[in-house]
Length: 393
Image (cartoon, rainbow, N blue to C red):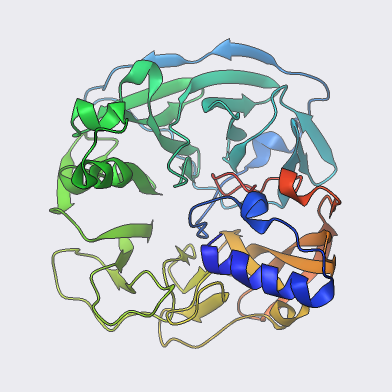
């Protein structure tokens, strides 16, 4: 969530009660942008584990040759889920992964999650695999997923790599172009070195292509052939999402952008080419099939859920948006349906949240599910996590 979201929720809580919750502690620092979380295929339907899972190490392989084959699922069967403590709630299932979940994503094989120490795990059919470690101090996209694949900046043993899951229990690692002084951190870094550190990140997955940033700029890795392309040298922006080769890119170099808005967001197939007029969103998440884009932020209004047609910019925001103090979509289920959640304040020291499935074309959300209610201890966080790859709290 953005700083403006915290301010907005503070103002609304103030209007309800003199007791104001510490929203900075609840929602955490750093921007929380919606992004695609595709997957959760049929392998999970029959699999539920009650009690702690058995933890084994994953197989860590070096970069493979061109004969290596990616196991990328095409499933879009995302379903509503949330995590509370060590338990993932998905439909009627309660899956106890044996570790308190700090952040997680769904995949077509199961779930990938991190704990508070940054260790990356996978849960697949009752087994927990240890995959690696993330640097969770940046507040940016700890985990990015698409189908069966999950990627992150791995910092195991102090060595930074772009890591991704290739098959069950198999993690591949790609070299990161960044100075060792930058990865070490500390007080001695210059402003440019800190900028290089924050720009070293995974950005998006589109089937077998990983988009990431480091000192080379924005880089695309073909995970099947091993080819590497630099798409933008020393960029002044970020790839928010990619769908079928369509790149959603936000430039932060626009001189007339408004306060609270990062920049202008464009849809393009070539970061080095010309682009059409900017979209009505600030960042966002492209629907499978690239018919819609949704974002927590409008182009001129932060923390204002926006969902538009990519063809003509028509708004498809659901009526339910007005029923909540805060509302946003956070994952696409398929070409039309997506998952969303809304927050309501009932008193100044309590807030309630619901998650629901929505239809873009029908502009409606249905069958909201109550998430764990936060009451009297808001500074400890909301009490649940959503599959967005970042910590909510």
